[in-house]
Amino acid sequence: MKLAYSSNAYMRFPLEEAIRHIADLGYTGIELMADIPHLWPEDVTPGDLERVRRLLEDRGLAISNVNAFMMNKIGDPRQKYWHPSWIEPDLAYRRIRTEHTKRALRMAAALGATHITTEPGGPIAGEHERESAMQTFVEELKPVLEVAETERVKLLVEPEPGLLIETKAQWDDLRRRIDSPWLGLNYDIGHMYCVSEPLGETIRALAPQIDHVHIEDIAATRVHHHLVPGDGAIDFREPLGALRDVAYAGWVTVELYPFVDDPDTAGRRARDHLLSLIQ
Image 1 (cartoon, helix red, strand yellow):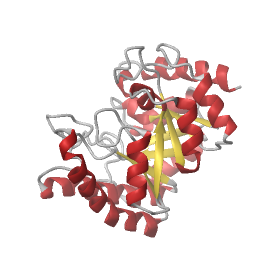
Image 2 (cartoon, helix red, strand yellow):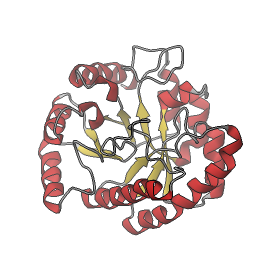
Image 3 (cartoon, one colour):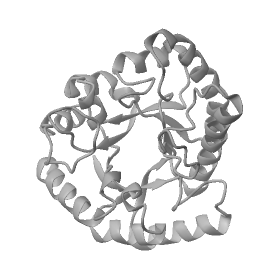
Image 4 (cartoon, helix red, strand yellow):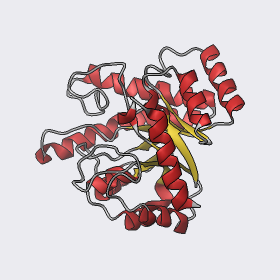
């Protein structure tokens, strides 16, 4: 189990500064944001990627994951992170998400990253639309997974409250529809807590499919708002113990994008709290 910090806490910093700050906090991994102001795949050049590789090497940071979930660049007024989603009614608008994800896969391969994360199908209007939304999601994923296979980079879906895939059962449904070794799971501890999934139980059940873990705290209300680990209601001994039990050897990435005003303090406090539980 290795601890990383997501660069999406540093959305007010250029990537070079985010790398320096995260390394100075003592993290050994960084989740790179495939979005502005860091690495929007459509805009980056081979020279940009080479500079990032050198910076990471100089600072002793490994890439825990490439986050292709957020799309601040598009600036959708409905919700800047989720849209455009995989299930937009407008096919042309939906293609922005699919093409972005393909570019993120290629960028991740160029950087030597092993996987990227994406949003889990977007919000749906009501349960009666779930089946058609799921069918659309599956059909959009298929050609993207072909790129994942070509680039040898896994595409990880991240279940999230309020979107098409929220729960273990919904993830299981998606996996039954797509049998691809290039589709994996980003298990977000806070998200699973929000939807009242038993953390230890689901981690043990999903262990073979978990390729990356996000960690943040959530209030006792289970409202989806990321808090610094230790400030909310999650007892992290349960999920961290389950990860140890299943011999999870991947990255656990702290994700604190609401803390853009002071990402250093948030990241330092998160690291100190989690290390006290891991060590």
